[in-house]
Image 1 (cartoon, rainbow over the protein chains, first blue to last red):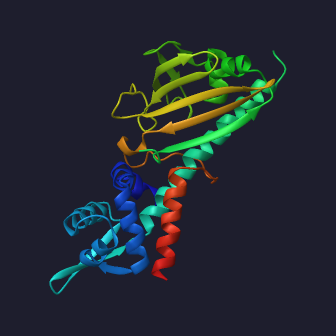
Image 2: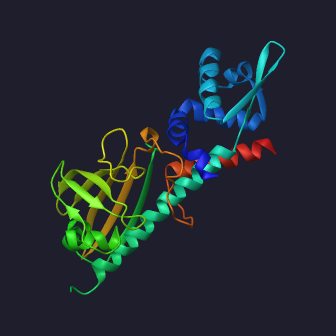
Length: 111
Length: 152
């Protein structure tokens, strides 16, 4: 449901705005399940920074984690991403229809 | 925050002056951005423009940012808050750019600032169809595809 997304749209977009977090999501997606240590080995940031980024992503439900021994294992949730994409598509579709109306008005013979 | 935007372009067989009039004149705005009745426009920086793009009677108080005829027009609007004057915290920035191409005009609209926008539940936009856009949509769709592939 888009409604659930929109309640946190600002936080979601803010979480995705940081390039290292998007990179982190991509890597985590390719692993399926991974620890912060594994992810830090792939990225140009420290393990501590990875942990902080993961906490931000988890706060907006883009990832979830479960404790496994001494570390936490993280996985990606794709639903907020597709919901956000759908919402942005709707914004774009509204502008398409408004631009089409502007075009029709501008190209019509003057009143 | 370059991805935090929706950008759309249309080519119009009319002069930039004609398109500018459609964009900014009171008798036209209501026809492309509302129910057809004239909109109220105070066409100057900090001026207020009242638009009705949604359900009848629901008014939005946009605040004009910049007016540079016939090339550039921008305003902020609080698309999630009817009857509330747009400010830096509750609104997105809408920018129109008009470029002459011979006797025609390339009109580009860019709406940005979604990352700082507070959107209350139930105020989602009401379009029922989907289309393609750039920026955010690409980023999140690519991410979603990537993540789905990685998970499978």
